Image (cartoon, rainbow, N blue to C red; front, side, top):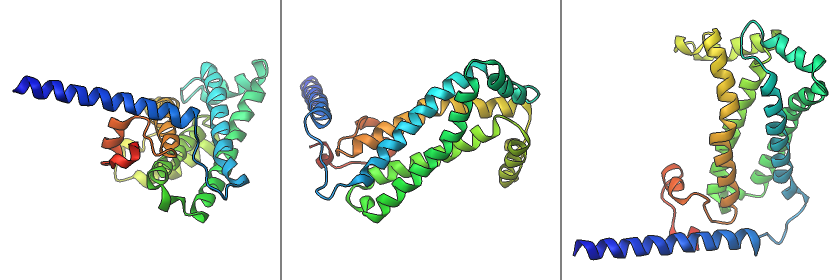
Length: 225
């Protein structure tokens, strides 16, 4: 009796996984649901994605020469600018690109609020808000990493908000290395996962259905159909 139930449950799982991947490929290759009143404001999300990809690419090259040490972080940045071939271009693309990321982000957010996107697709809205908080965290940690005067006092002001937790506000070398690791690794873990999840919610089809149930709560079966 138990064996029959196990076989039935396994068959149902296989059917669900096959249906899920068929719908996933169909929603990305065959048909894209678009509103009738679509306009140029819908390009803001695409432009935001392009700027984030440029940030990741330039950040990888910067990380190859960056030294996450309190005494040599500032000099390593200027070494990259002055000694590396076209290093100045990559560095200023990365620093200026952060401003463009937030410019497109706020325009994208204003568009979503103006058109009431949070009402028609709340999962996309909620995942976008999580991405917004992740971006603010990544941007703050990246602002600290050059460790000039602006970085030092900016980190001092923000970390003083965490004064009830003394272990989190120290600007020691270990804490500085931790800032670099979080800034570098959060992009490739949580942020990329949430970005794909945010895009997949546009087609009412979660990219990672089982993780979605844990993070965003129980979804209706209609979101898979």
